[in-house]
Amino acid sequence: MNTNSNSNPKTTDTQNRTTLQNIARRVMLTRGLLPEFSSQAVSELAMIQSPAKVSLASKARDLRDLLWASIDNDDSEDLDQLTFAEAMPEGKTKIYVAVADVDALVKKNSAIDQDASHNTTSIYTAAQIFPMLPVKLSTNLTSLNLNEDRLAMVVEMTIGPDGSLLDSDVYRAAVRNHAKLAYNSVGAWLEGKTSVPEAVAAKEGLAENLLLQDQAAQKMKSLRHAQGALSLETIEAKSVFEGDKISDLQVEKKNRAKEIIEDFMIAANGVTVRYLSARNIPSIRRVVRIPKRWDRIVEIAAEHAFKLPKNPDARKLEMFLTMMKEADPLRFPDLSLAVIKLLGNGEYVAELPGEEATGHFGLAVKDYTHSTAPNRRYTDLITQRLLKAAIEKRPVPYSLDELDSLAENCTKKEDEANKVERQVGKSAAALLLQSRIGERFDAMVTGASEKGTWARLLDIPVEGMLKSGSKGLDVGDQIIVELVSVDVEQGFIDFMRN
Image (cartoon, rainbow, N blue to C red):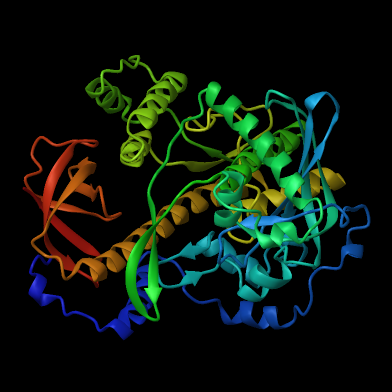
């Protein structure tokens, strides 16, 4: 690794975006990911001129008149989900989640499908998005766009007054997005910080419906955490550009609008996998196994005067996390990051009906899949095809061997995509920090292994390698570091312990 800061030429402000785009393409190719679609997929795409006609699904319900709305990032154009809520007697709430029917246009083994199965996910780098599907589809013809009729898979759930799931169903439907909303503006309103967003006020009854969704989501969230779901909150930094110059790293924060979507999607994913299992259809499940380094999590808790049991216990860990969030909310994301690293990565596993589910330790659920973002994740598109087979009583479109292979590939490619996003994010951070060599920062150790020791700055969302002074350190330790050097091309940010 090059530690000579003078050997890394500084880019001009107008080159920042181009520099990062070039780095992203190079890193993707190095990691076996494709930055461009194949010529076969491009030719196939030219033949697709319109969205799937709602009449194509003869047994689809017509739910276009429901007050559906999308809530997503401010700049999102690939809209995968719509939500709607209906008040029921005895304090119950019926929740509807509509998921874009991507399979209606992207057929199994088509050239577009084969490209999607290679990367398996959209890749969101600092300066450019590399979509899993061509934007003509993902942001238009298979996106649940505003004021457009679309086919969807609908998950319907009846939620009790305590947030529990009482009943559910899955079916195909025609839907229509009546309002395109953004997390930040809706979240600020739900939290009482601002007035009703203009896009919400423009639709009669939408404000009341969103409040009903929020109430149901908060009850569902409370019940999940009471059952041991972990209150993890990490710092996600988004590069901010002024023209083509990177000017800041902006921290993405949780809010009530994001929690609506998070809790509804977790519930919908559970319903989906149980729906398949009940009909003797295999699935690809998302699992997080028993923590690999529970002993270190126990040590971190002990440093804060909290005793965790010797064996992994999600409920006890959630008690510790809740205590720490209340005690130090500003530093809680750093503690969360340490716990996430120690929990280990999630993975995809093919599973036959009746097999004992591994479950998802962090969510405290046994039945879990990914099904709600088929424009962005390939596992969700696979699950959609399995759902259609279950609904229409058709043969399963994949053998178990195929599902095993697909699950393994999706796990591997997700890991590679995450590494690309992290590396380009570090290159962006290196661009931002290259004028601050020699400065000191408060930091927390986020990784410690034979490969090296990493630390994350507490006040700037940046992670780098500790080049010296790492002896005796472990994940979660707080230290002071000095910025030694940066390498924009390699995405290296090097510290030494001060």
